[in-house]
Length: 452
Image (cartoon, rainbow, N blue to C red; front, top):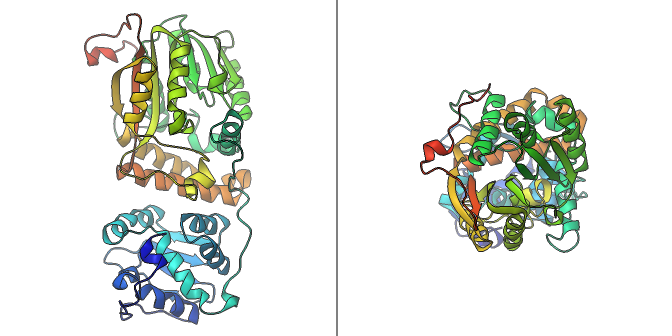
């Protein structure tokens, strides 16, 4: 929470712009908002509707984002944790329920950042302090949501990493099928046009990875963080490689093995439940790591780079596909993404990734930003979730459905605003010729059309 909210400036006492309706809860909340930051926090992009029926109407020169229903329990959450964690707990538990355009609401953080050094949580936490002035009956403190992660043990030890990864991926294979579609690819697709079908765009992304790696028949491919096996199935079927995929999620591995059997590729693909640091059957000709290094941690990037180099033959290629920070700050221990989505996750800047690979003897050969591709990917996942929302709630529960809805929407806004991005980094292990062509167009060219 910002200093401006912890120690409100009481001289800005213009309450003329706030017009609470109904009972006293809104009046108490409005009074303190009017006194913060010279009254600038009074310009709410949403209507706040409290449990007693009173409300603070939206006050904005743009279309209001919607109505935020504030239940009594939300006040306790925001008083106990007057920051993003308190806001997240209230939202996940249902003590805060939003009815409106969530993407529009999250986009308002740009206005808040420009006007004051605050976050979306700050005005709500401030309002909670105002409501608390109405008396103890306004406060009701509940237990944190059951879906909140609390990792134990040494940060990024194999045991803790297993628990952190399984918190996210051991939710339900049926849910991930619903969310991601038949491709079961949980990373950004590669669009030729904004109207592309998601499945075609995901196949195009898998094909792009294979072409960049210059896969050839009978080469050994290691997929670090293989998910449900989509890449190794595509690579074995299209390019005839012998592929090993690793994951820390047993349910993922079970479904990946089932899909491999259905594809008739059991003689070419295998999936292991293992930490990347445990693999010792190199060398591999090629290594792919798609959407996995975000779980490694900045302090372990050197270990990650050294492990990849150890597993790769001289002249072999590795493709690292992962999300990086651009203008956003690292997620703290009390952020929504850390407590409810990706425990211990990290988004190191591109420079850190390239340095770790270089220090391990891996020469960066190509970098491509796919930032614009993630926005339509996320919106298609959101559309899948919305279309089958009742089924999703029955499968994973209302808390997790709210978590995924907020996480996907906030991610779409973050990629669109260039707070975060995603890169594909292709590197070659030094010590032998890498075999890459001189020209980049030829570098990804192939005779087989995507979708064939």
